Length: 110
Image (tube, rainbow, N blue to C red):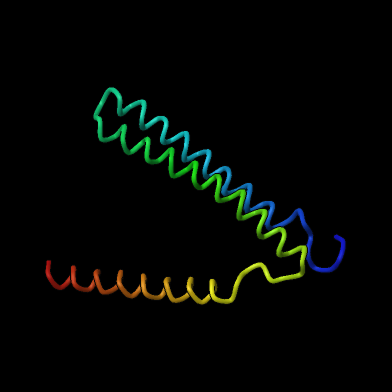
């Protein structure tokens, strides 16, 4: 470990590799869905193609995000932007409230 708290090969590297594995797995699943969809149902094939494209976009985003994060850490800046932390917290709270409200309404109706 050199230069303080930042070790360039730990959390950002592991996180990036985990997202890359997720993207590759998504591509494999999408290709399998496309293959099966070619013989079973056209809609499944279309969903498979969308899955492959979304996973490819995730792979590209992962590389860019890693480079950005690594640069920020090297410069001594924080890894997360304070606004991003607040947005995730608010988004999670709103999504939880909506899901809870939907569950209550569903239970009351039926």
